[in-house]
Length: 243
Image (cartoon, rainbow, N blue to C red; front, side, top):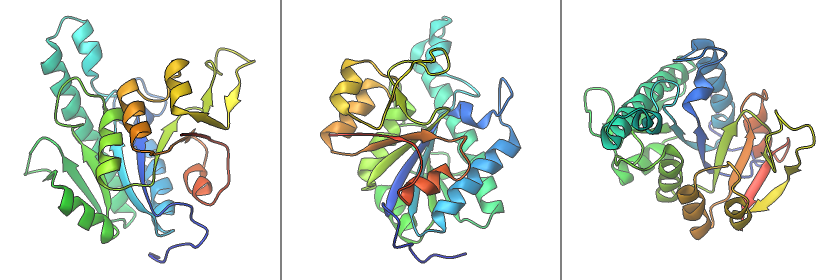
């Protein structure tokens, strides 16, 4: 495995944020192992370019706290259940990455020493310096915060140079491109415009946190083979959200 940085690489340390639903494949629930393996291969290809990678994976394929709350469950309990779902997804991704020979650490905001490490910032930074992929699980460890906010928080703490938001579409559109044939894709857009236009990039707290810390968000299609590594070489189709 090469650990020599590719001189064409745009960023040296990045955060990859994906939803739990991205791990479902064509299923309606849970994990689809071939899909997890495919995403792990995408991560490996970037790792081999010498890029240090953080990851945050949502839990919506197993349990979404907001939906549980809407169905009558007490919100705090529902959110903690959602956090535990993210740990399950993180462990699945760790297994897939380590099958490919990529050393990986799952780091949880909720201590559960038998299955993963507790979050200690300096230790996490050291893992990245040793070229290990760090998957941050259990959100921020607090209810009422999404994994979007957790990803932005950890990206700032880890001094990442950008957040890569992997989605089903190849960027940010003014309306749903799957429902509207005349939807317009933005090459670039400002944080303020995302908030004003209520575009579904990340939740408002995450966008505001990224804006206040001048942390760009790159929105791209996770379904495009080689898309993640291509963007780091300055190729491909994506939207850059920045100042």
